[in-house]
Image: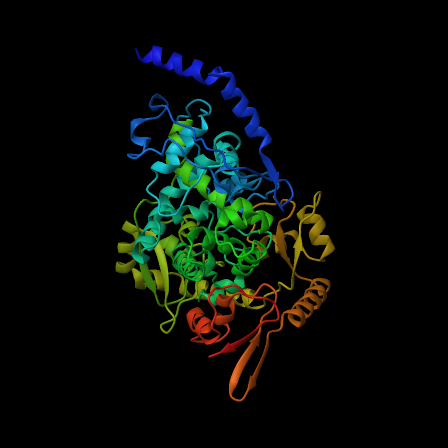
Length: 533
């Protein structure tokens, strides 16, 4: 009986039911209009929806409430776009970089067969079945990212699933504590491919890809010894706090996610260009190219991280401890001291504590730092703390002093964007330095680099060039404020948002700024004068 039904379903999908149905399909192809974005096509609404066959789904993936039999499709259902940029987590070479950064990452013990493709209706049903607060629509752009994960980037997904076993509990704990949508835990998948040491061509760093200015604004420590953008715990806390602020500003999670990628100023600009629309898919054509692919990639990440097994993908193996604990350190320690006494490999300490860039915990009694250890080692650390601190203390005191002195010199004076055909040797020669220095300044474990990568460099040429750019930038972006009759005023610059302006004045909130200026929306125009309460 079941095989008969399956045969009938196959015949149903393979052959047109009637000539009128075929005509409707042809008409649908003609119902296409061009939007303001190049290469962006949006189908006109069609009074139909794909109906899923129960035999094509596992019972646990079918939602309790099926979609209505008739549904007028909107832009978010039918939008297409071939002119998008892959987020960093999907960029070429990421799977190779993961293998280099994580020594203990291995492929699955047993791989299944190849990918299984499904009708669009199945993907729609599966996304509807996910217990998500954030809307996860399905369209051809989302489908393209799902296909990328399930077909071309299968080995990357294996590694992501392995890394997720370690990082997911960290994300979920903070999301639950703050009362935010749990599905936000998949943002680091597309931000960094779950690599705490990831550095984008623009300089964004860590699991959540903080730029240095945003990181410091959110209270993260960033210097040559400690970079808390790489700290899985602290960066997660501040990234979620930032996302909450963006949501408070825009009142919509999809817009908040887009603003996390391209900045609130660009989202506000897209809202203005769209005529004041505040739906992500309505402002889609006006967003930067990379951000157009960012939300669809996030939706696809939610899909693949939940339904990977239905595409014959298995998690890889990662030899990181399943249970860890945190200890407070109030004396300077070198990783080698901990390794020698507790028998933990220095490599494992680096993986658990990527924020310490010199293998040194620069703690003092007045400024303690946290250290993550395997659970059993955390107990041993507490019991043997004096022995660890005293282990070859004179030798490691000199080594720590040398490491901190080297870091304090901060030789980085500029950045170089890698071009096609360049290697570290060519770049080192150009900036009159060594390959070893380039690797040290950029935390590179190998000589592998890729076009578009941003490398920190040091030379008088780089310093002069960087200073000129900085001066030009400061002169064009200087905020214009003045005081008249005891009242401070601010002139809106291109790209400004209420949230960004409020951050410039301690204690000022977006709502207070709106109330003082009788604003009914968050929309601003360059040159507009705002009263600062």
